[in-house]
Amino acid sequence: MLRVAQKEVHSRDFASLYFDHSLDFQPGQFVMVWIPGIDEKPYTISYHKKNRFGITLEAKGIFSQKAVGLKPGDLVGFRGPFGNGFTPMSSPDIAIVAGGCGMAPLAPLVEILDKNIFFIQGARSREFILYPHRFETQRQICTDDGSEGHKGFVTELLEQEIEIRKKKGKKPLEMIYACGPEIMMHRIFMICEDNKIPCQVSLERYMRCGFGVCGACVCGEQVVCKDGPVFESKTLRTMADFNTLALLKSGKPVDLAQYFSWRCQS
Amino acid sequence: MMKFLGRTLKNPLVLASGVLGNNSGILKRVHKNGCGLVTMKSIGPAPRDGHKNPTVIDLGHGMINAVGLPSPGYLHMEEEWKDLEQRDFPLIASIYGGSVQEYQAVAAFVSEKKPDFIEINISCPNSEQHGMVFGVNEQSSFDVVSAVKKVIDLPLIAKLTPQAPDIAKIAKACEDAGADAICAINTAGPGMVIDIEARMPVLAFQKGGLSGPMIRPIAIRCVYDIYKAVSIPIIGLGGVTTGKDAVEMIMAGASLVGIGSAVHYRGINVFQEVNNELEAWLRDHDTTMEDIQGAAHGKISVPHKGGAQ
Image (tube, rainbow over all chains, first blue to last red; front, top):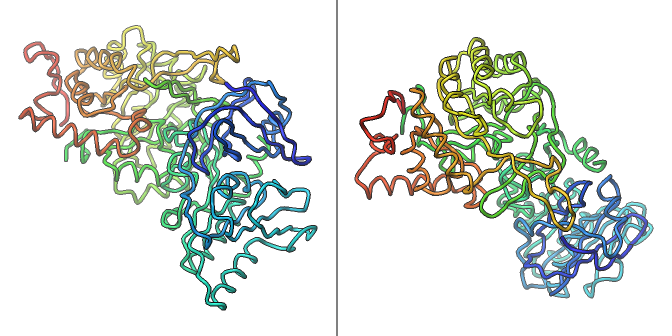
């Protein structure tokens, strides 16, 4: 177990917990976070330095509200890191598209990529924009209510960028990394398919073991905790359940709206 | 290719129940990755979430788990059965219940869905009301097997627990009740892991079943004892991770060899790898599956007439 070294409250709903521990880690990988007596849940690592790592939580369910209430010195259990993360490419002709708390797994990736990548971040409104001052890399902001940046979807800005590059004869994007609501990632995947751009997206399912044995998180033929959580275009093409089905805790497959409304409360 | 209870299998490896097995897609992939016979996650009488996390912990030399028999419930799996209708691989449907009547209700319904085999889980340690309470007692094992046998028209496999005081007697009771095969063993223990910083058990259910390499000697002993007691075939599992482990299990008396926790230690390709290793071992030793099956019992003292038919 590790003690919380520092807590950073980003806004009413978002907070990061930092732990002084060295992790062998790839951006996009996750850890199973245990609060004794409460529950254990997967969280992607949102901050990574040599002797410190952090996770970012959105207080929306029983577990995350408890986690956000932790103080420096409190003990938290960890297993991992698990899964396959993003494969970083060193090129400026790359896009990062983050939606809501999907910014968290992408943040350590942004910090190691070229500073001139095309970076879009979306949120419900200004107060929900995660890490407003964290990155050297310039970003395009999108909000649902227009309280900051473009009013509308991140996918609109992405499509614009692809078009602009075509018109100006600039190099096309070589890779798009995305994390956010699954419907957003699916839309990005479709845009990428239409434009022959490879993408990598990070999926989320209810997990138990975290290492590919129990099967709780299967998505089509893929085991999200082990084969993912980051999947590339080639695999996404074969995943029948991508943007359609997810298993509840009982193993019952349901549509994503039902899954996410259940998951957010637990 | 080989025969098992009238069905053709591409090899003797079996995916253990409770490992992957949560949808048709992953069952198909496990088969494609070299598994002769795959098992669905245990199907229960009613929707059940299982336990809160932590539910599965790796201990390096094996795992401890108390997932707690999550199931959509047998009446809520239409999509799954529809997906499995067109399958091109043999399938075991594992079922559980809290009473003989529940086992019967689930079994009768599942039998209509035409899996190739029905396995009754009378051995899960992770629920107070289900499974293991039957598998530790000869009479209740007999009762549940004979009751289920009456309502299905598929081969029945009884999955046993090493917690039975004498697993061979339970196996014999199952055989007498009409079981067509024995599957042994379910997880051992139950055990407990305490986090010394948190000063409390790690698993939310506190105790859990042990699996993986650390329980292999228990599994081998159980299969060895069962082989002496019954003449129906045995699916031997518990800690098998390599081809040599499979050889050992077959020598103890297993006709088929199950793999579960090894999916963690060697990945989903473990089936192809173990099968290759098993075949290579047999080749190197100029022998066959038939030759080594039950070999540890010595040729003379073997009353066993079953095995891979």
